[in-house]
Length: 210
Ligand SMILES: CC(C)(COP(=O)(O)OP(=O)(O)OC[C@H]1O[C@@H](n2cnc3c(N)ncnc32)[C@H](O)[C@@H]1OP(=O)(O)O)[C@@H](O)C(=O)NCCC(=O)NCCS
Image 1: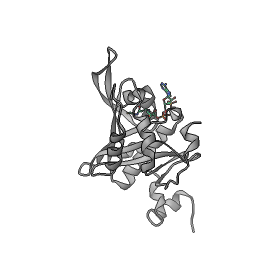
Image 2: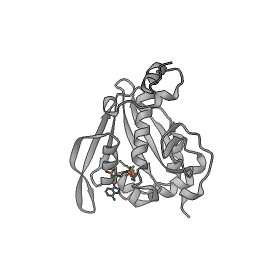
Image 3: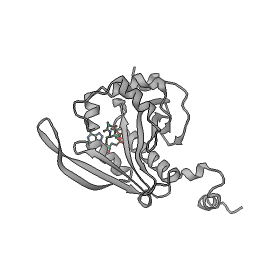
Image 4: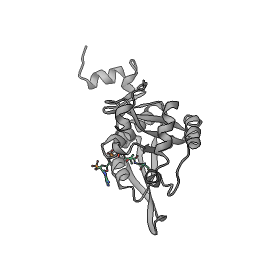
């Protein structure tokens, strides 16, 4: 049986989505994360060819997940309550209102099902609504076609390339930079979580006149 079917810990729903929500990673998730991040296929997509992270690396990531300049959430599938990966905003730059997004779905059976695209949308919505970000960017390796398509669908645009900046198994690939602005993203919907703010605007949108 896969991990998706077997994990049922209580998870606070911090950023709600449709099929997933963003929550806190839990210390009890660490052995699973350690297994995921020791996988050479996963770390290849993360741009760390040949690297297998250790349980100590995961412990360190967990302890630093909300240090200055970083916000990290676990990605939880609503139907099963299972963690499938994590998404982060890093290098938070309050002066310029920008941050770098990183995402990793460690549970390979969950790849290509639309969860990554939705998690990126939720993290951007959080950043634009609550962190006052103006733009968010990300880097991916040129052979990460799945990621590229997921980010395009989430509203990112290609912003540039470091050509042939990376080598794997004797072949060279670009590093690809993508970005999204708050205007590109449109209304995040998250302000609606807060009862009194934007009430008039919300009622107007919902067609209420009383
Ligand atoms: C990259 C990642 C976050 C994308 O999330 P995901 O849930 O797998 O992606 P989605 O299902 O939302 O979207 C995948 C897109 O790629 C397409 N796709 C799926 N499998 C593919 C494959 N093997 N090759 C190319 N495209 C593929 C899908 O059709 C979809 O595109 P579409 O919306 O145009 O149809 C996730 O796969 C992941 O974490 N991978 C491993 C680590 C990683 O790459 N992290 C990102 C580093 S920048």
